[in-house]
Length: 168
Image (cartoon, rainbow, N blue to C red):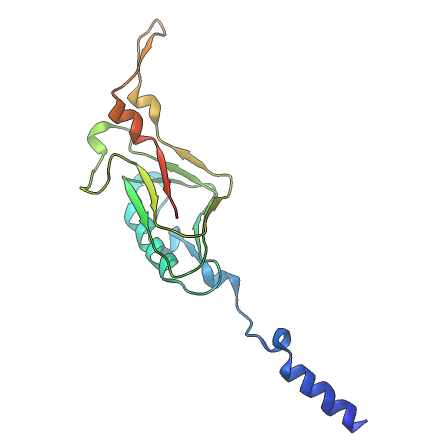
């Protein structure tokens, strides 16, 4: 009987499945609210998103996730989520709503924005899911007269609402 117990213990210690470290998947979830985003639809939450993204991209274990929670509306300026990231895959879980600034005067363009509002660049294994909403507030860029005739803005404004996925 003692021999059977010794064999069992040896099996338990040597089994890769049973001796693998236990990790908490929550350790790989980076919620933008934890980085200072308010999600009130009025406050510029760009910095919080970029700070959270830096931690997502630096994470080496598992599948790090940028979590954008439901029942919140986050206003973002033009932003580029850049890689390469340390993990083989990265997830963006979009549950809430992301909105663009509503007026032309509210936009803050950087020199590397390249006329794109939201851009993902050089990210292997990028997965975006969650059922949330990306609202470019395009209706503010389309002029409509009282009779229902609408005119199209310049091609530059049309490109603003393009979601660039340069993922490799």
